[in-house]
Image 1 (cartoon, rainbow, N blue to C red):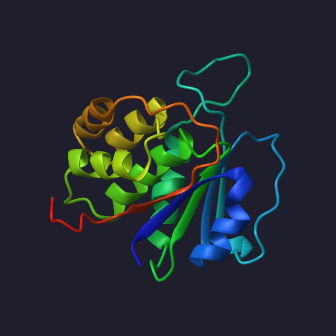
Image 2: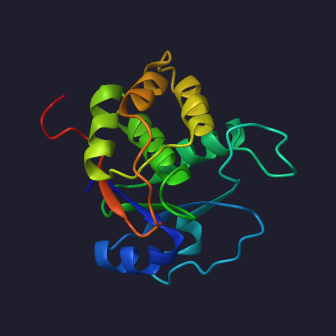
Length: 176
């Protein structure tokens, strides 16, 4: 089952149970406490402590960096894809959609960045992937700027209230 569930923090337990997820990636500020859903084993949960910012040195906040993205790619590679992968951040709008794109490209590198970004937009009119994560992911996955360009092409998502989880297919069912 090659799908990624993207969720706000407030709905991770519901999404994990509903979709039978057993693997989870959390992209959340380091001081933000939360409970891992019981259906997710501790060894199948990756927490990446970062804030949703695009630049380093922003008032003591932690910007996404290469170490975060490498851990994300490595964790995605260890996911057996028998059940969905759940990825969340605070609102499910910026960090987690970016992480979902990076994970999808790392697992299915032959796909078009443009088609993947269009699938993201079709799945969520609200997603606005974190630009710093996208830039780092593009570089680490040797996408030559194509992921950055594809995400720019779909533009900023609509305003969201953080209550709109969605499913992203890793592979393009239409072959694009």
